[in-house]
Length: 72
Image (tube, rainbow, N blue to C red; front, side):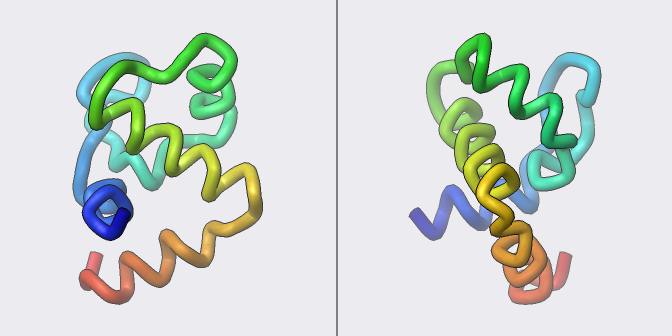
């Protein structure tokens, strides 16, 4: 979903150790922790799961391309 992809470069983590960090910049180990414990419900969970899939499948170029496209 294009909106989910766009939102991961604009949305910030709303709570926890990495509060305020852009979702696309969250460290992989933190996303792995969420994957093992369960992602939150709703849009945030979908965003985190998307970033997790991108990072764990070595598709970081997608995030870089989005940042360039939207001048982030």
